[in-house]
Length: 394
Image 1 (cartoon, rainbow, N blue to C red):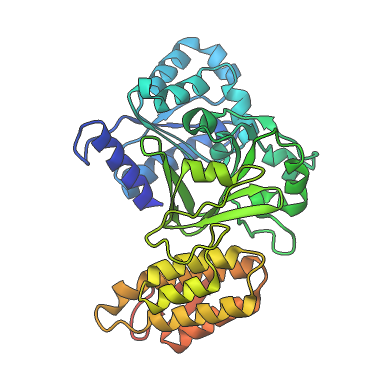
Image 2: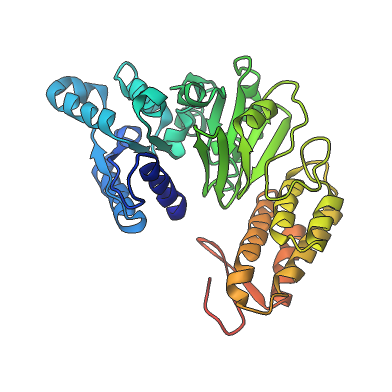
């Protein structure tokens, strides 16, 4: 996610009237993991990541518990002043329920709302993992449900998303998690059964906004558009209906709201090509084939990602289209690696989704087709890697 982080910083600096390299006042909240014994280590790792990988200075804000804040109100006031002055605010791993308990009546919520409001002068809120869960109208207490075994329930969230965009949702990261192996850990470790239980208790007009792992959703409040970046997709789920927007796509807030409504209109996603969108706003197999035939491989792969996610898709047709994309990936005659890399990565995203869904035949088809074309796929503990004949790993 280094490139998306850098882009947000650049866009923010440009919007504030500076150069792309302007150092925006940026802070990181430690509240979500404040209960952990290694909190200091996590703070340092976050600081080092943004300094060394992203190339930006991010100052830590210490707010690990309400009791700690009450014990030293002067220091807490100083930390809150830093938060209100920052233009870019980050929070990440830990426990969403602990973060909410720490932030209640603390001024953190209003500070985030102010940062994203026009009157606040502009800024960015970048929340990941546990912190992302708190952005919605309601929040899942992940630790309590998955680790302790408590009944699934919703907590009241910060509702930053609704106040900034008008979208009322429960934000669920780690949407495609597959760590469970023999048991379902999708939907941030809830699994299908528990997510269905929770969906029955969602407030009226609220939908699930799911973000896959290694994936981000960048929401531009000025243009009212949202762009999917990273490896996976973003899902809008309303009980038994899910609309998936693949990486590289841009959609409007109105489209997301429509997909999240109980009785949505048919709305086509905004993409590089609008060809081949059926009446439900999703591409069909003929549309994917037409895009590939026209040479729009990127558009074809994006459409294929959406088609592959649909439960009514014919698996044999999807497999055949995957094989066709694999063949196209090997046809360029100049600068082969730079040209085919995006296609190979997208095919590996398809393969990862197939493995997560236990569709191993489709996953093997992708791997075998790439191998036959001289793109060797290797599975490692950190995920799949690939390389061309006589070249190093990629």
